[in-house]
Length: 70
Image (cartoon, rainbow, N blue to C red; front, side, top):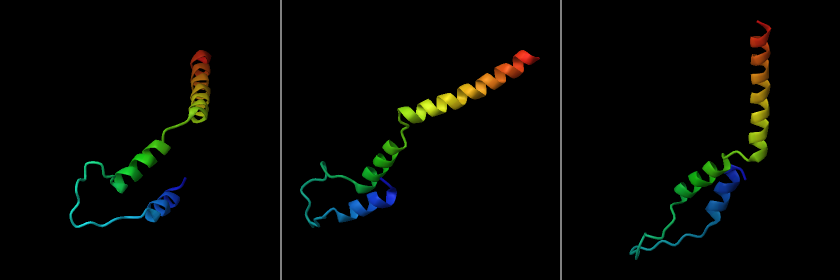
């Protein structure tokens, strides 16, 4: 889900405005929720890690070949 799609969904959430809130203990700050969702989306999945590991292994192999050639 893109940031724009998420923002659109958040805007569709109905809001209630009350001059005398009983408690804000269980309330959800939408900005905090948005930040948490996008931090979670940035966590690499298994395939991302596998791809990065493969790229790093190739670089390491090239360095080892250069070192052994000397």
